[in-house]
Image (cartoon, rainbow, N blue to C red; front, side, top):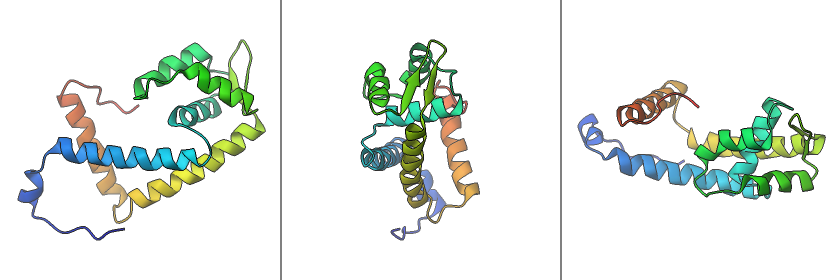
Length: 152
């Protein structure tokens, strides 16, 4: 971690939220995408693995695509993601829904460990209360500007 220079509350309050929120988003997403790429995964792969693991058999392609598409900034063809995970032997599908295989769960856990390292690096020197306050402020700003301030 780089030691951050200290600034007064007045100096910090004068800073542009757009710059800092975009900077953090770009760096965080970039670091997570790099970690996932080590497992030959994209964020949509990761999202798919987690949703299917959390509710085996509950997600069909259309329902999961509808859920994930709002978070996707790269205009992903989700059918390609599902096909890739199926071809790897990580995902099976029935008419009822998708389920991870043992290999899929093992891959999800490896990717989780990689992402956890990124999250640990991001949170160095930031306690849970500070992190929660930051998320709450960003969530409220989102609502103030007409967005959905609810947690996903």
